[in-house]
Image 1: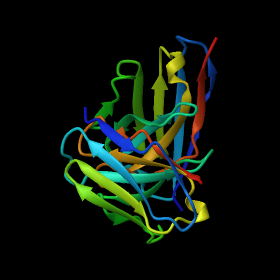
Image 2 (image 1 turned 30 degrees about the horizontal axis):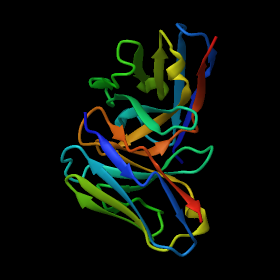
Image 3 (image 1 turned 180 degrees about the vertical axis):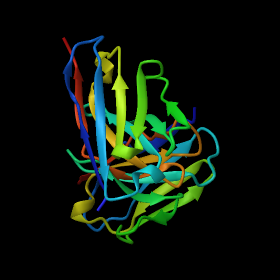
Length: 107
Length: 118
């Protein structure tokens, strides 16, 4: 099983801030990592796959980087609609695993 | 437009059974692998099970192995999850999720709530 450590669990920020979320793997997964955004009461939505490829329709203020064991999701200029919970997910091997989530809240 | 619509959730007693269904539309269902992912109230996402497009490859999370069975009917564009020997810790919203390029999810259903309680 590949264990994932996502940090921080809670991030307080203001509109316009640049924020970064980290996801660390217990073993290397190449670039087999996705990021999702979830708003309360809604299903998750795909933001990034293959560690750095932006899903169609996702604003360019979202970016992903990393490979191997360390990955980062960056929101360059936080907008009001970005306040949500973010999850990383590895798909290098089964069982698929998700990070614990990072809630981005208004400061 | 891709649509995934889950059904079959509800309240069930510990030890009971439930069958979830997911009706797919807007894409060629038989060409895609599918997953079930769940989320306990106030908790994070947990992958539950995977089935390949032809049903030839199936995986389960250890937490449900031996109790849950994933299946699909490509002629009916439907995905299923048979859940037996249900426990309180199986209480969650269950999402049907389309698998893309061998691993990540590009479309999710709206979810169906399963509550295991006496």
